[in-house]
Length: 208
Image (cartoon, rainbow, N blue to C red; front, top):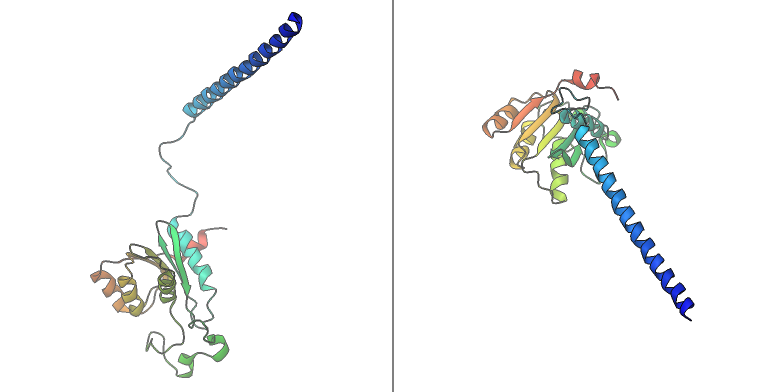
């Protein structure tokens, strides 16, 4: 009787001793790992600044996206893409195209060609919305604020789009190719919207 109880007690004792040893060993192992990690991180040679990064600048990155967006356009004269960005996050995109549900120009033909209207003249006579207009309306449609954002566009905005850009709260415009509308610069200057032109050569230098 006594022997059986002693054996039972010994088994219980050894069980809990074993569990305690495992816990202590685990704690020591964890402490060792943490100490090793701390020492490793302290010895890392991380420079305080980077002189030159191999990453694309944000302007080039978003302009390349603009060019990709422009390929969705069916315009036979000028394919334009626009991207609205805030804090390096894309809010909305747009390209020049007729309203949703309206036939594409490549299907019914260009009304400006039919009327022999020169580029930059009578901008209101066109089936398509401009890329900047489409991007701004996409943001409005889904309740996205563009206040303080940057608008990237492959072509410099016309003065009609410039007015919309100002009232949408856009604070910076970056474009690639010029567009003949002197009123654009005037609106942006008076309304304090920064405008910058990127060189197409910079994009060509960037290899995929």
